[in-house]
Image (cartoon, rainbow, N blue to C red; front, side, top):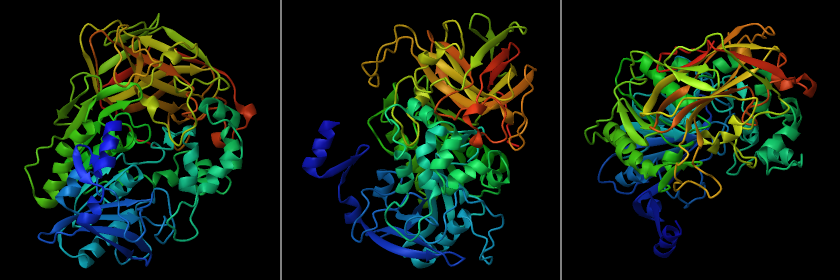
Length: 629
């Protein structure tokens, strides 16, 4: 890496992936122009257009709309690169970047996950949403920008991925290719929530999304939110101790007073109309253009979004231009080539992002926007995170005759597809004052979590408040592929609890180190987190109408984990862990039912005895038919 940086400094080139580019490539080959594009309600959205200087042919538009700024705004100052990858930039497109409503240089008021309005009536000046803003932008571009071929594509990662997905329903006829990447789809299950539980580890992100700007600006205006956190003078070197010292979420409300997004979270603790109308999933119907949804198997922020956007489009639309790509990445890692791809301590291979950019993303846009090439993309292009290789599927989830069933037996045994003692019980005491850490290491407070998605779980398997079950050593490779459903028969001594289920790959004792292994970590016996999910027990019957448990009475908790494609290699073991705290990734459940956990006081938190019955199981490969209600 040091040699690469030296080459760049000496020769004035920027190596993106394996493409050598002049540091002034964009300025040398593109012309930058700024426009204030009017929407149907009169609000103007600040838009920067980079057009190829070569006018010998016509080009399609490739657009990204974002709430994160389209800088640089200065006249004569250009972006270092354009588009999703250098390969597309070199081929030539008219690249369009736009600040969404209420952000940076655009007019209007910002709204998180602005609700979609069915109909897209261009004559209704008040019926605006992200789809209509995209429609109006495309319409203006076609009429006012020269030398285009009449086709438009769009892409975006994370929140821009949502804006991409939100423009798919009732799209402009010129929009022929969309690639939502790591897209948010429903804020009650993505990003700031997981199955209704609040991700406390996102605490530092709220100022970005919960403070309105007062005027058009090229600079960030939400620093005051972080200043309020800093004023608490808590030690940020240890995230676990930091959040424990912070106290319950009701203390956060004192710090974030006036932050409209935090206040929305507090006032809407359940899946009510406020959240439901912000889900884009119900509107993904009558999709008549090509969609390629991209995600990372180890994306701590948006794993629910890409999988469910793909599946919803597939379910609601007969057309066959719907593709899913899932690689061994954290949030957005496919957009850059680091040379080697690893997540935390786990190494997956070399130039995986380059493979995606050249062989998947590049031909997708070239085919639909320029009629170039013979597109042979499969329905699903997915990375097996255990074998560490790409696989293709004609349908996802894959069709199976019988799903795999993981069941629990005494002496911490995990049984695959065999009967167990249904009368067995397994218990632990969950103490919210001593919650299970979500990291194996002491880590500082961060903006959002990432590395834990493949983290070593040996720290958790040693705890008495974590149920740990593992198979015998595998004599053959064993692949889990498809959807996952946790089916838990439980009894708890209190009136509420959370349930965390983790699928773990246990490495042999002689597992060697890799390029990603730090000196202080031994890979022998490593317990790699492969898939996990948390579920807030009060929502077991309805996300919109929570219910307390009846103490010490049998109850049923069923919830999905996100999909999996992982081969547990010969010599490894499969492990399942189940527990009820996971801190500070998620907030602490008081375990004593209160109407609104965001308003719970310290005295509301109690210990609970959690009992898991032998009739419980984890099912992989079946159709879960999970629909939030």
